[in-house]
Image (cartoon, rainbow, N blue to C red; front, side):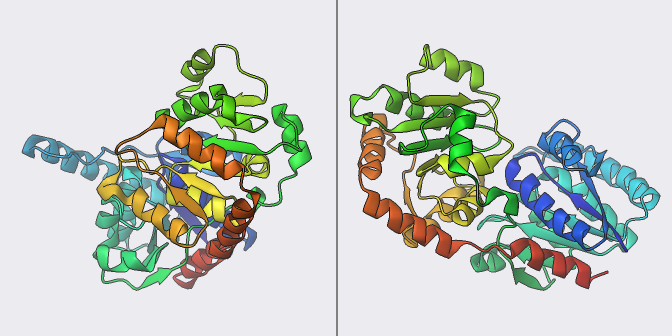
Length: 360
């Protein structure tokens, strides 16, 4: 069997889809390694999932300035030279790049050695690293068909969706309620800002917890580790019916509790929400390339699976009322759940793995 490298990371939106594909490849008998940033999420999660991890050094692309671009080019060249040695040492047969600046040295090094390379773009608007890597890719995997015209590559493009770990599905609500100290019979709003957290969502959760109209609605609040201390300080004394968690690496429990999920709109999050059949209120991050999270979110909204609130003109009180109204409308929540399940692409990891194996 072959030796395959997953390359990229920085956030859960890159790391978890990569590992979902890696799990399929491993189940087919291949040896799968992970090349990524030694100081980011992948350095912790990949080894936990049983992957050999290799740290790679890379610089983020500068937003402006000739000096910054020259330094970036030199750092990238240095990284490519280092990764070439690693690829030879590990006797790698193929590379799958999943985005994030850390993917670039590995994909480009593979190209220089003639090693087959595939990239996966999770968002509607491709990131800078994938725009660069697409120029040397043998295959380009996409989540959305609309991305094909936005990514410059002569390689064949295949729409596969966002790979999701099937372990996220079928979580037990009673076990989840026990895990978080909540009542399994009460409706619950899940706030989740992704692996990095989201200050805006944290503030909204605290505001909802204090609003008298919340009634019996419970709150499961995943703060992100960066914000946990500040959020706990913001609550003061955590009210009854509220559970605060810094980071959850077993999201099946969280999704099992979420009758409504308030979240950012990264493609990985949206794929998980669809697979788990979770109605959602999406608050796209405005701090992303070309506002791609809003484009991601509008797709679920158009399908009837989500409501979307943008940060421009942000009104905490109005958003609290929106959540309370949604939680009081079980018919609409049921329709949103059905619509979410209809958007799920549960075979994305298998389809992506098939493309990689087709190049071996």
